[in-house]
Length: 292
Image 1 (spheres, rainbow, N blue to C red):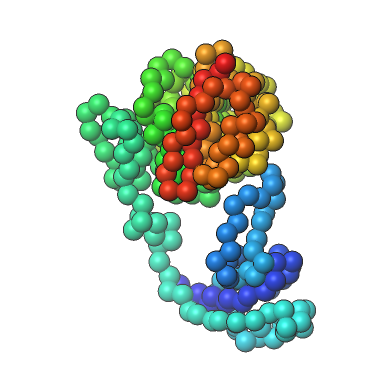
Image 2 (cartoon, helix red, strand yellow):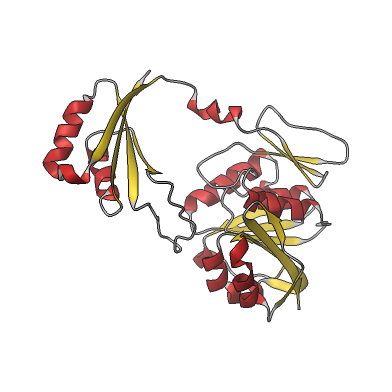
C-alpha cells in the first residue's frame, strides 16, 4: 500500500495545533522536523520542545486528496502561517525492518556486543545483547549511550546492584545484567520506556533480574552502580536524589552532557562524587566517579 505524504512549514506555536488538525482529518501519522537546522538540546522534564520554524509531516491513505486537505487547513489557519507545501506519494515497505539498513552489530570494550535480531554475535569472551530500534530511546548508536555501554563493559559488575535512571529502551539495565550484575532497577518518567525495557529484558532472558518503575513509584535503594543517561539540566536538578542512590564506595555514571556542560554538572555532584577525567565522544561527555 502506498501513502500520500503532505508536508508544510509553520511557526512553533502553531505546529501542535496543526498536527492535531491533521489528525482530526484522518492522518495515519503526524511528525515534526526542523525546518532550519536549529539545534534543540535541552527540553525541560516532561516538555516536548520543537523548533521556531517546524516542518509538519502528515501521512494519509491514498484515497485522501492533498489539495482538499490544504484548502481545509486554510479555513482553519491563516495562509500566511502555512508555507512551502509539498506532496509526495510514498511507496510501501516493511517499515519495521527498514532500520536494518543503518543498524548493525556494535562492540564495546572488547566484551559487549549489541546486535539487532538475526545478527547476533557469539564471540568467545563476550556477551551479546539483542536489541531492535523501537519507540523508546537507546540502541547504542548515539554517543551518550555508547559511552555508558563502554563503561559497563570495562568494569566488573559481578553480583552488583545497578540503577538505570532514565532507562529509555532499558539497554543499560539489560547490558549490566548480561555483564554479571545481580539486579537492575530501571526508572523512567515515560511508561512506554518501562514497557520497552521489559520487552528487551525478556528478549535477552533477564526479565527476572530487572524491575521497572516510574519515579514516583520507585522506593530508593542503594546501588553499587547508578547510571543516568539523560541531559545536563535534569542531571543538575536531580543531583541530590541521584547522588543519594549511590552506595558507599559505589560508582556514578552520567551521560547526555554536551562538552561545554561538563563543569556545571560536576559542580552539582562534587560534594558527593569524586570524578575521574571526563570521557568525550564527538560533542558529548561521560562523567563517572566514586562516592566520597
